Length: 329
Image (cartoon, rainbow, N blue to C red):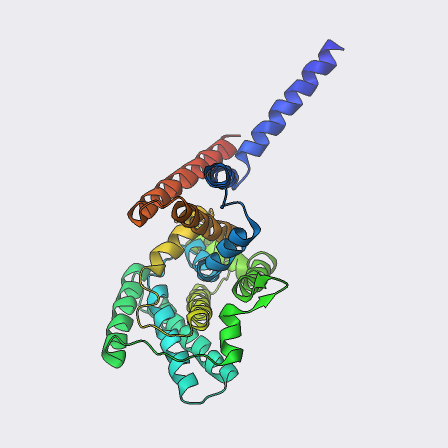
């Protein structure tokens, strides 16, 4: 009996180690800890209304973070997503004010984001220029074009019912932006984990030379990934413009950093070779949850970035620790 009891204890110990070494353990631990702390810190945090607000506000970053997950998982980076968001919002807004049907205006805005992403991809893949430099230049270029074109003035009056529903509508009490973000998540989860394209993306991020040797078209894959990232930034731009019924030339200011942060918090490695699509949503929700909780507690907004930065370090550090333990075992 004593030997059998000892074996059971050993099995339990082994199972506990497996849980700690499981990918995403660090992220889950930080997320649950923050949720519990904020729930006890304020009686207003853990309410149905506030949870729905968090899910709604996180939707915009989630959509963009999914695209960024593919880019970073491939071993790249895209600093232009914030500017693409601003650009596509202005495109959609001007088309709507000109009398164009909502569906066509939205499709053209999405194609504009896709086009900018493809341009990024072509320059990175064909000209062999570092993606950091290419997307930084694209970010600066778009910002300049928008300032010249708009004079810094937003496009007001986007109050068409079918357009505002995209960002303000609800289905069974759940906001339409969150529903759209879940649909995007499901589509790209399938693409990433169930298709050859998704395997190509991760393979390139793991070892581009080996990927080339097995016949993967690296240039084509890069162009497609950057194109999809640009298109998802356009989806977020439509959601934001429809939510506030206004397209602003600086709507995407700072979004690129929030999106990259959400992606990294979600467990996607900056060194490539790992793409966690569901983690992108968790990272986005976590960032929004923290900002929401700090707002409820009346903490100065200047401290929000400090706290989020610490969470990034903690989540990434715990995940890196888990990965090292897993590799040793």
